[in-house]
Amino acid sequence: MLTRRQWLKSAIAAAAGSGAMLKSTKANAQNKGVQKPSRARQQRSTPRIVTPNGTSLPYEMKNGVKEFRLIAEPVLREFAPGMSVKCWGYNGQTPGPTIEAVEGDRVRILVTNRLPEHTTIHWHGIFLPNGMDGVGGLNQPHINPGETYAYEFTLRQHGTFMYHPHADEMLQLAVGMMGFFIIHPREQENPQIDRDFAIMLHAWAVHPGTYRPDPAVMLDFNMFTFNSKVFPASDHLVVRTGDRVRIRLANLSMDEHPIHIHGHSMWVTATDGGKIPRNGRWPETTALIPVGATRDVEFIADAPGDWAFHCHKSHHTMNAMGHAIPNTLGANQQQLAEKIRELIPGYMAMGETGMAEHSEHITHMTGPKNTLPMMMGKGPFGNIEMGGMFTVIKIRDHLARYDRDPGWYNHPEGTVAYRLK
Ligand SMILES: [Cu+2]
Image 1: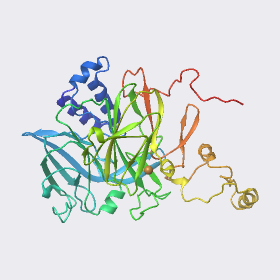
Image 2 (image 1 turned 180 degrees about the horizontal axis):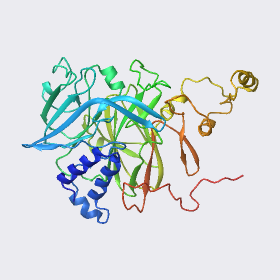
Image 3 (image 1 turned 180 degrees about the vertical axis):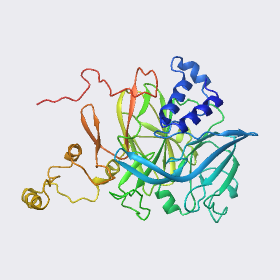
Image 4 (image 1 turned 90 degrees about the vertical axis):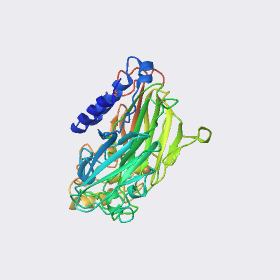
């Protein structure tokens, strides 16, 4: 059994190391007790969220109060190799570390501002005294650079919530200031959840060759992330066949995201307004995550394999270089290409038969500085031709631990689509 003290230690270690995700999932695997699942089920302690490509925030117990520390600061985030973005976030991360607590807890969050301008934090969806709600100017003075403010309240509900600034919001959200605040129920859940993931959806405008998200953009975003990573840099979600899986999705971007699962049907079980009563839940393969909202989805991972999990807006599974380009589909560009080559040697016309060839060209063509090709990622059968809001749920019958990539799925004979001629 993993005690809270052990969890705290592992969370601190995870926050300190670059293998943060690995360690926190290791804690989860230990927590679960791989050899004796039924025993582990009874003993599981509450902190157990997996934030892919992220961590949970450690706390200190002070006279019965769980004390957390958040530092609002500039953060350099690699969306995927080849592109790093000058974001703002918390404790060196965007999204900020996931806050986990239990219904009934008294929590104190110390917020230090190391940004060049003032900020505040609003605790989205959480019931609290009005003066703790974090709307700068309305509920409290702004937190100036260098200042630390304390927020303190007792948690009177459970569910998936968020934290984000309520000061210069257009800019501070555009550059990545957001995180999960997850409150576990006091009573053990029934049925119990085996794997519990938290994924923050976001859309960014980072013009090719630049490093800072453009907060003035309202509609025309070019990078779409799960926890501020694009495929194939996003962590896989590794689960065991038969696991009850919950994925908590949150959206503070400017657009809604229809999140789609392959090979399974999922139940929408909660919003940031609370649990949906059992007889009010509905099945989906695509759950729409509105702006300024969270949704919990649950499914039984009953089909082994490598299943896609992605936003269904097709531009949201593409990176920057797929947007705002001329439409060359069906256009004979041969003469044009020859003329351009007189001016730009090596010029190559693309897109006449479709865009899939872009995936090939990334291996031998260099693009603009600090941006990403529209589609990336290699699978066991070739280019996956995805980017952005895309990851893979890896479901395996025999899985010793959750923190190791089990590799690509080994399909049983006769279960792969085959070529006839
Ligand atoms: Cu989307």
